[in-house]
Figure 1 (cartoon, rainbow, N blue to C red):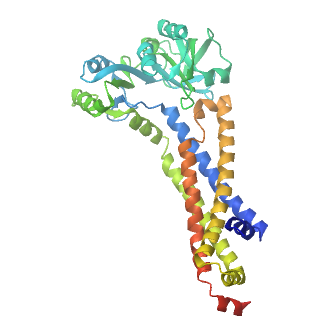
Figure 2 (figure 1 turned 90 degrees about the horizontal axis):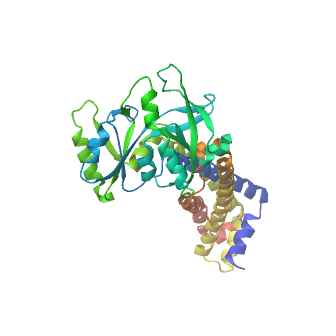
Figure 3 (figure 1 turned 180 degrees about the vertical axis):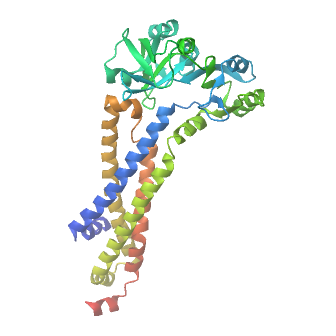
Length: 387
């Protein structure tokens, strides 16, 4: 009889116990898959990183403004290939609960730098040419049923107009798609000049400056030159790689990585104790069976492999089922227009799947180690005396 059939036979001795153990592991990997996909969606919402893009923000905090005049000064710095800038708008549609990820940008340079936002050339040109225009992601357009050429009232919970209102009439001139599935289409972009000319305060200031360097190897040197240019000024700068800036943006929402580690770690430790204890009990119940196997010529090493094989199979079955359901749930959530704006990149990535496979293997080996050791130490004569 093959080892695999013996593994199946061992797990089939008590189907209820086996089913409950698989269910416990299933829950742990369902939690892990959903939380890891959620973290991935936050990273995508913060923006797709490029190796040769760096971001300039106020040294105090990226919520503090920078003078618009910094843009021209940065353009002349060695190693800078292209520059754009943006400002957080804090927008919503009709009522505050319809929140929109809205940024005021310099349209021509911004759409040139962020080539992952894909749209027809005529729509891009229309967005650049008309100051009262906006560029919206496909997910947002589908959520609200917006069409090209439609005028909408875009409101802000931060910026008020000089006339005392907070409503900014805009026209949808472009609808963009993502270059690939990792690009979120849950954002809205308006003209910075339209905002700056009409807002009641903080004119001629911007939120952050985006720089494209001549080469990724120049990122650190360019960052040093930029920060040195504005050292000891009223608005000192901190220049980070786009990846580092996005990570800082995510950390403002809380340390998601630590939360995931805490939740899944607690789940895995609990599962480890449950499975390990259950398998240890199963081995005690099968002492006589193991003694017979040794009498028939089964080596201690083979018996140990069979026991570890049982825990590995439990971990793989429960883990794969949990990850499969997590994939279905995340795909369903990200396909809902109202949620796609925030979680458009929510999915089980290859990296998440590989990490989960590693956890499954670790869980199987760790929970099977002690029961396998106990099985290998079973003494045939002593075991027969207990029968």
